[in-house]
Amino acid sequence: MTVRVMLISPAMNAALREARFDGDAPLDRSGRERARAAADAVPAAGLTLSGPSERCRETTEALGLAARTEPALSGWDLARWSGRSLDDVAAAEPARMSAWLGDPSAAPHGGESLRDLVGRIGGWLDSLGAPDAPGADFLAVAEAAVIRAAVVHG
Image (tube, rainbow, N blue to C red; front, side, top):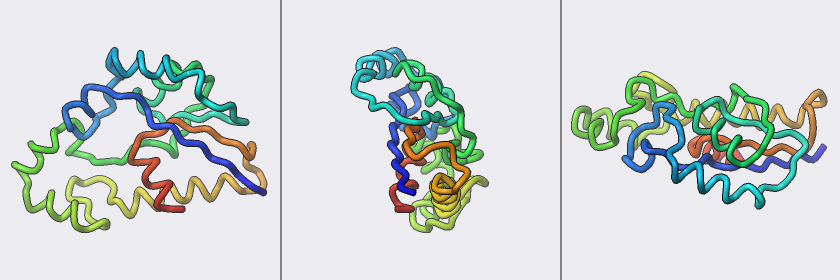
């Protein structure tokens, strides 16, 4: 069976504008307005899914989509770095930041490594072609790291 998966990254919020590891922050006004403006360009799908983050759910709503929340699409678990700025982590933990940037198996933050993220999202993608999958045409609003992991999985 051929499966088509369309992925949409959620709209901007303050955490992204401030280069912080997102701690599930809501959309800002500008992000909400831009998502509403893009609503007419979103293609139809057999099943629409949303990552569980507030940002994904709010983007889905602003796009005018009725979506099922999909726990498998949760964002990259960066554990104790969540909510902190990239500069703050780099200054406070330079060796750990360097390890994280240089080794896809590293998880110095106590969360999920990049390899683990790609494996988790790859497993979800592979499950969509299963005989008991709900449809062959999916649209999902998911965090950017999840989308990158899906692309890397291939």
